[in-house]
Amino acid sequence: MTGGTTGERPVLRVIRGDATPEEVAALLAVVAARAAAAPEARPRPAAAWNDRGRVMRAPVAPGPGAWRASAWPG
Image (cartoon, rainbow, N blue to C red):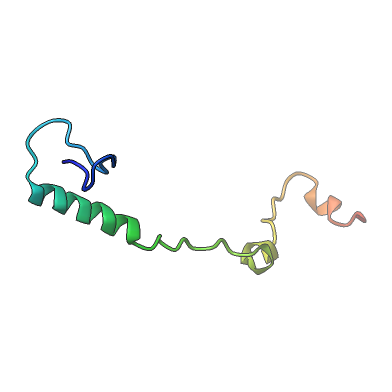
């Protein structure tokens, strides 16, 4: 494929094989459609203040002497 005007560098060049003008046009249409497509919206992470896991209490892990330690201050 050659550029439309002289002195202009081609946008696309076929390196190997024989591409018909229709095949090149189809390829350019796919590339242009992909470039024009809006980027996918990524879900935003939840804010830390809205995290329900923060209000959950840590699990109780009883062990030897745990009942005695529960009465100790602080």
